[in-house]
Length: 228
Image (cartoon, rainbow, N blue to C red; front, side, top):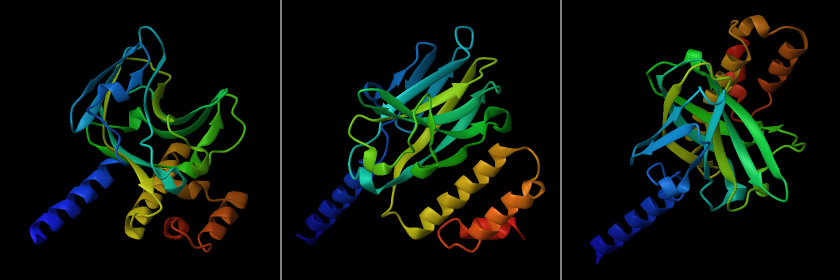
């Protein structure tokens, strides 16, 4: 009986974990623009972008439905297989009477290589895009809303791979949330400029960073390090 209970608890744990992961091996869950070819397996999804037809391309999947009001963001890894000239970004797409887009940059592929790059996309860092006015809140998400990945300003054909794509919840461990918050801060600073971050720390921006370095929360450590 004890073995059966342990097996059942393990099954529930795995089922709960799977509920917050995107199904990278299920082609029925993914839709792509007609210049993007997707291939799937259990570990990752590969996207091949044809720049001869359009200078951008996208692919998307419904956000795993569950505790949407508990969502902190989305985490995953990306690897550049070939090509280099494009911006890699993410959209949260809300299908209402009108379609609403909220966007967040991930990286420019000129900074990528054949190694895996981890990324984290906090819900509150998505900016309104394509005519959308209001900022995104987790409580707005409903079943059927999508997470979309888009390459913009394609200059050549590009192949990328994604894996470990999942929803991050408020109930995740504090160590994990802290790691992801620092990761996002690092990526945002990298996307702002190729100039060393300390060169940007002047005037009003420096004062904002100083305030955030003493304001508490998960990002405080990153800002403390930045102004040293």
